[in-house]
Image (cartoon, rainbow over all chains, first blue to last red):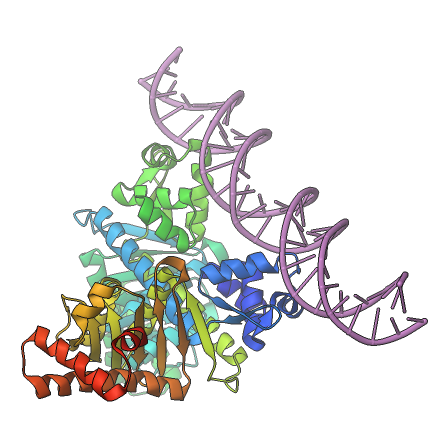
Length: 274
Length: 274
DNA sequence: AATGGGTGGTTACTGTAATAGTTACTAAGG
DNA sequence: CCTTAGTAACTATTACAGTAACCACCCATT
């Protein structure tokens, strides 16, 4: 009940109007007096409320034998009504704001998003817009909040690829990182990347809580870098597996050794590097 | 400006928030002070407003050299955001209200819609829902308000047919009534019918202003009657033309004569009958 | 016949929160 | 001392939720 009231408030109805409509749905036609009883709306207010709903074409009235009786619009029609209203409004806002947002404006700027919740929301927004490809560099901490939208994306034909930091990989399209055990045991900050359609990339550090901060850009260089970064990491994973053919634990050790050998860094430096 | 503010209010923003966002779109990044100047929002309030917009992820902030600077979310993303919000909300409301509106409830009831504006709105709602067929019995007075939605319907493959009372018939799918000249000269009340997909029918009398009243129903009998009514009238039109082959004016006269002859009514009665 | 409770509806008021707008203050820096 | 930059506190209006009181009718009970 709480939930539906909040949702319907977003659609522009107030609490009394919502209660009246919902009550009418479960019992109609009724007169004001009875609706007041069944809905919990004070009898002294019910006629105003019904008047408003009548004006919005959400309830209709009719002359009964004794009193005026009311009945609700069909839910299906109400939804259609709302859809068409919001569709129109969104279209207006769309054209107006696009005009303002002079496209000559620099497109290679950076947008910073702060706070875990905001980051998740923004990520989902990007994912739901993807048309062709999503490249991920993602930890298990964030995955649960993005999984639904990723599923949707795959369903509509979007190609998913990338690297996953976690034991239970929910997507066959993703590859678990070759150094996963080490990473998980260290549990430092998590670097995350989401690249969409070779068009935009979100990248940043997730630590804890509201200090987390990621950056979004459409700058072509950075977008390219983000996608390639993931691509390269995937390839290194692949090469390393091919080169060793060993069991998982041995393999991780091998990778560590190779890194140390060829990078010129100490073990400590390499870890901090990550 | 008025229009866009009203529209964006529907989306859940207040006037200051709207002005701030729109100003930011045309000039960013800026600090609070300058945004206050360009948007007309009092400087004393601008930071609250920006705080709210930040929480809604509609603007973002960043540490500039001297002051904190703000920039807006891309319009395209904002629209996506809103769409997904309203999509979710509408889905919730849809499932909840459908559950309440026990489908066992009688589906053969009548819904009365009063007032010209309401009638037009409701008609458009029905038309925009049509999937297969729209049968019309419509006057030129109402046509301009429905024409757009009818065009849309035809575009998506809906079959249109029916009778039109007016000189300038905008749809080749419609037939002008055989007694059009007489009707137009008399200018009495206008009977109107809209039947959708053999599923629902809207029928009633349009006089003038708020006394107009039409009735909507899904009652199968009435729906059938509405569609057949139009169908039969079309056929009579067709037969009459075939039987006479005369010029239009003569033809109308012929129709009148036939009616009189076979119905047993006087001319007067027939006219009142219409 | 009187009474009182249920039905059906109206008018007017109160308290609170959000919104829009104002006034006045601090404080840095050229 | 003027512009820039930001804060604190106040007022007025409105929408919203909730309450109190009243009228008028009908009808069953005492």
